[in-house]
Image (cartoon, rainbow, N blue to C red; front, top):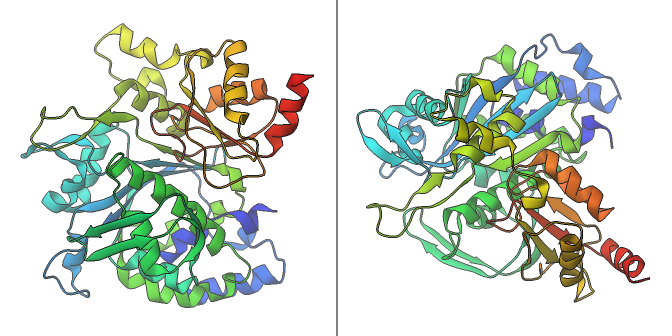
Length: 420
């Protein structure tokens, strides 16, 4: 499909933007008439733009129409880069428990920055945490926005990988979802996003947020939904606080219309959970070398811009060979031994850090090479070694791996060839 149908960034951004619905109506009319409406937009994105997007927790005792609804903790924190140079959107998911230093507070979780100093402090803290990266604009979305958006879109289709049962007392949610493919309504989608499993905790939430973003992208750009966008925008604007100007929004929408489905790259901030009893609270401790590699690959920041304490750290970013990467092999095909056989095949090809993980419960037609750790260049090496599969730039694979190879039915033919 053409990028004008499959792209989501502009469509989703428009939902949370000060763009006049009448203007969107006009654009949609031109779109249905098969007009190249990007060229008709009065503004174009001329330089890369970094945008901080925060989903804000419910603030107890605050009325829904109060501006104070934007002053809670950031349950979701994303850094989005729109780059017209390489025609790509990069999305960095920052776990809410990420350990940072907040001026005047000390060590804290990054989700507290918005409480102590609003969007400006959250921007400053994230800039410092990410090697002084420049954040151009912010978007804060209040509690209730996500549920409303899903309802307005008529639900979103996602695969629920396991039973989810959990009571979130702070956000007044009784989570109860059964496994399998299903179309979730607004309340169920919020349950899916907020479910906090015992093993992976906040990191599992980050993965499900990325799954939902992909589902929203697919739904927003559906030809059935497009004519309804003006009304959806009217409903959604009450949930949004942003310093994006009208002109900037038009430029972002125009930029998005040239994107293809694979031009959206998602990654999670590399790190690991803090050791038990080391801190008063549990944190996500940043892997500094991994962070710097992600900033270079996804956010176009060159290594020489970083301020390293020693040469070893700067060398560590680039010197990991694809053969050293941690590769999880997961079967999603009907052949029970697929993961075992391909794990051995990769070892025979020199990849020595390969391991098999439990089967994925949803059978897939096609194999995915999920770039869990953000190694985009190495992913091509892995894919070429396999000889098939599609690279998925997202952190939705096995936590702890650099890549997760999720084997689909197309792997069976390859196995037959290997056995001849």
